[in-house]
Amino acid sequence: MITNRGIVSNGDNNNFGNNAVGEHAHVSVTGRSPHADRPTGAGTADERTTVWDVGVVTILSEELRSVVDELKLVRHKEPGGLYFYRGEHTTPEGTIGIVATQSQSQGQRSAMAALENLRRHHAPRLWALVGVAGGIHDKHARIGNVIVSTDIVYYENRKINPRGDVRRRGEHRQSPAPVVHAVNAFFADHGTPARILGQLSTHASEEFEVYPGVIGSGEAVIADRENEIRSYLTDYHEKVLAVDMEAGGLSQHWQENSLHDGINPGWIVIRGVSDNADDEKGHGYHELAARNAAHILRQLLPYLC
Image (cartoon, rainbow, N blue to C red; front, side, top):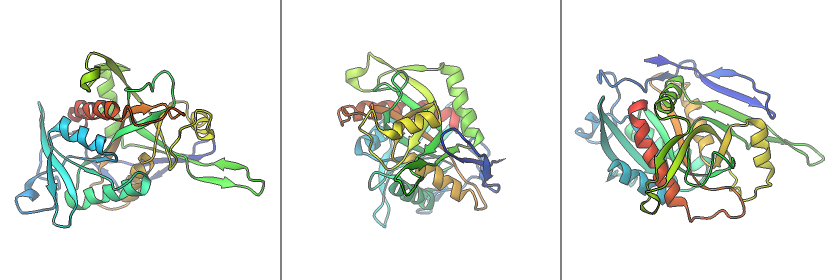
C-alpha cells in the first residue's frame, strides 16, 4: 500500500505553487494480490465478494456503449434505480473487476455525482474518465487520436476587476504516482506516440496515435479556434492537448476524498479527440473517438491494476 500526496498548483499562466494535500490518502492501484485487504462493492451478499478494481465514468451514450462493448460489461440496475455496467477482464496477472456508469449530464458537477455513486455502491480502486474531447493541438490532437492524461488544468477560477479585465487562476492536479508510473510503462512498451489500428469498422485499416498529455477542463463548450480559453491553456502549459467539461471534477473529487482515512483510488483520464474545438465542432466523430478511447482503456488495464 502506498501513501501518496495529491499535487495541486494554483497560478496565473505558468506560475505554479506546489501545495501538497491529502497526506492520509492511501493509494493502491498496482499489484494483484493478496486480495484480502481489498474492499468489495456494495450489493447482495454474493455481489459483495467481487472486488471492483476500476470504476469508469462516461458522459455520452456513445462513450458508455463503447466501454460496454470493448470490455463486455453487463447491465445491472440497483434497487434505487441507478444503472451500472459490470464485468471482469482477464490479464496474465489476474482478473480485473470493472464497473461503469454514465453521468446524468455534461459538466463537472454531474461527473462528481457519478463518481460518488460509484464510490458508494462499488468502491472501485481506480477511477477512469473515458470518452471524447476537443483537441487544441494541431499535431498531436488530430481527430481519432487518443490523449491519456494524468494531469488536469481546471481553468474556470478567475478574477474580474472593475475594468472588466479577466485574470484566470488555473488549478493543476496530478494523478497519484502509481498511476503516472503505469502510464509511463505503457508508453515505454508501445512508443510515444503509440500507434494503434482504428476501432470503428470504417477506420479499421487506419492508425490513430496515442499521446500522454494534459487536459484543460472547465464548463465551456469551446467551438472557436480564437477563443481566449485556448490561448490561456496553451500559455499556462504547453502540453495541454485537449479540453473537456468533466476532468476537473474528477481530480477535485479525488483531492477532497484524499483527506479521509482508508483507501482512496487513483484516477486517469482517457479522451478520444472528436473535434478540434473550432467552428466545425459537431457529433460526427463521437463514435470514432469514443471507440478508440475505450480500446486504449483496455490496453492500459494490465498496467494500471
